[in-house]
Length: 358
Image (spheres, rainbow, N blue to C red):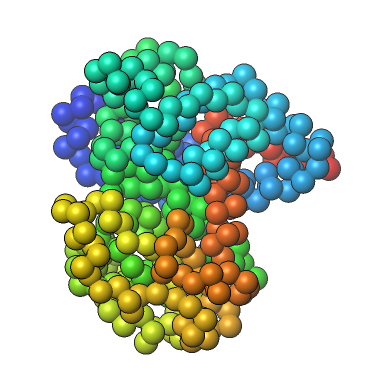
């Protein structure tokens, strides 16, 4: 099987994402570097979701937690976050702790050698000398990908997990979203043949791009994108979904769709990407918010999700509604990221074997 070690950066970067995916995989199909949502087909999604549930079960007991913390106690991870984050950072930190991994962190380039003029590429190459895994979040599109290629060409090919890059990809958020959807519907007919509505800043929301892509692994999905025209989903996502046989609806009428969907995925306005200050504030978003009145329009078995942080797009009045899953969604992130790291280091069989002895 070809890998990143066998291809030049020029040839690699000329490939489509679908062409890159096999180069990022191990022989068993699981990612070595986790960079794109497209790396996860249905088999890999089921594997990660099942592993996350098993880890949750094992972690309920002291003996189980002691077992988990011994699995990777010989490994070290660098958590390199130069874009602000709390949930993603803490969930990855907790995931490492659950597996016994020692961690280092950089959360501000001003406290690293980048302050002295070192390139980010050199900083990351330095981290690979000390750590066995690099988890990175950056505003710079493509940085995780470039470094995955560089490290794979080196004599120390340390795996990289993309924890959010630019406006493009957030694969581990999509994994935890899939896990949340699966658990929400596992006793209600499963995730296939569902209608998911995405609301808010869809043009710049990398979570929506990644999640909608992963949902194409389930049969009969319908995607309803609801946003002001300036913030509507990109044509590339629409084309991709249609090419995979999914139904796509573009709308600006959230209330009309609320009674007809199985899941609502709310997003905040991503004004950190504004080209000019105050650009987003001039867009009327008043019709793209959910409170008690909007929850009353949703079906009894529908769910409400949000990748967080939220602003005013979901009222706190909704928090106690059992259909509101965003706090559970956040906790699921810890378990899914634990599962992904365990799978990256090929610990699946040991985890399964522990459960079989109980």
